[in-house]
Image (cartoon, rainbow, N blue to C red; front, top):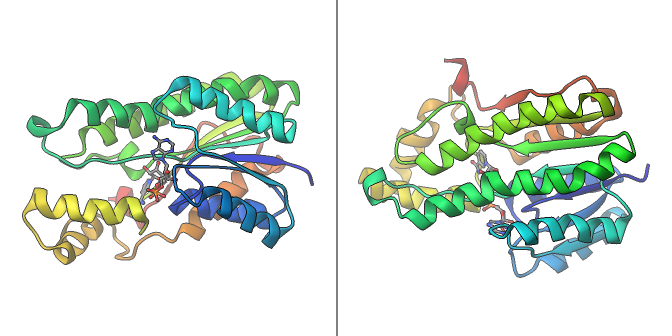
Amino acid sequence: MDKVALVTGSTSGIGLGIARQFAANGYHIMFHGLEANGAEIAKGVAEEFNVKTSFSNANLLEADEVKQLVRDAVAYFGTIHVLVNNAGIQFVSPIEEFPDQKYLNIIAINLNAAFFASKEAWGYMKAQKFGRIINVSSVHGLRASEFKVAYVASKHGVIGMTKVLALEGAGCNITVNAICPGYVKTPLVEGQIEDQAKAHNMTPDEVVTKVMLKKQAVKDFVPVEAIADMALLLAKESSKTITGSSFTLDGGWTAQ
Ligand code: NAD
């Protein structure tokens, strides 16, 4: 199998877990992210799983850089079969103090970058009659929590975009789905524990038990491996009728 996956934000957290799972299953990987050791991570995964990898540190705040990221992947690998729009940022604050620029950045990275990357990859997927776009949304694409106005808006937006593109891709074997995790212990969440402690005036331990996992029926962080397994399933040829859906991996949060 000679398939190519571009995973945004794959030099950290959930994206890295997804990229590693795809590499373990024979996919060539376009790594991407702002981590300084990104090129090293890409090289290490290539050696470990005997696949081809490349790396880009495109800044997803800039539409032109998002488009260039896709073009760079195509230039290196020839095409893209799977696009995982995973990169994302968070900021926690009551609306009155929410910095305007933070709001704009969250919408740009979490939502707009998924649009630009999908648009740029679309023609290649259409031409080869195979495309799998997997958007990492969140349980916050389906439910709200206070102090997260930009994040919740962006993640709800991602689910809307997922549905529209699923309809547009239906005739040419391009599927588009969203994965909606509950809390996963990654650098993004480590940062939130600090921010939420300030916003709620609590200790970090209290934030984990009383705020974060409070809404999950299962009081454990969601393992990265579960999200990677779900992404791999969605990428299969046999998943061609699974489209426009949002898959919750949220410890029972939205069951309530
Ligand atoms: P993370 O902080 O570990 O990784 C985020 C990645 O995005 C990093 O590689 C980072 O370099 C990249 N990134 C951030 N800003 C960028 C920019 N301007 N340009 C290019 N790359 C940029 O976070 P994570 O927890 O692995 O989150 C991954 C995705 O999963 C995000 O979309 C997040 O919203 C979503 N998510 C996370 C959780 C959780 O609990 N961790 C839950 C639900 C959804």
